[in-house]
Length: 68
Image (cartoon, rainbow, N blue to C red; front, side, top):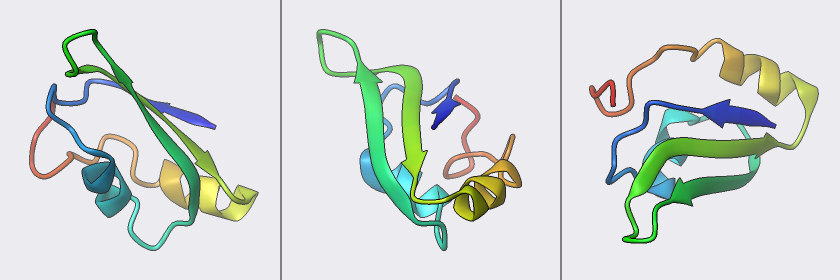
C-alpha cells in the first residue's frame, strides 16, 4: 500500500486512477475532511509487487498538471 500526499482538495478517485493508468490498483481510498474535500492524502493498494514497482516510477509526477 502506498500513501499519496500533497493532493488537490478536489481530487477524485478517477484522477488518481488516471495517474496510475496501466497499473492494476486493488483499492483507492481518498482521506476526506468533514466537509468532503480531500485532506491532501490518499492510499492505494496494488494487486501485486510488480504494479507497486511501476507506481514508484510515477513518484513526484503531477496529477493533471497540478502539484497540490
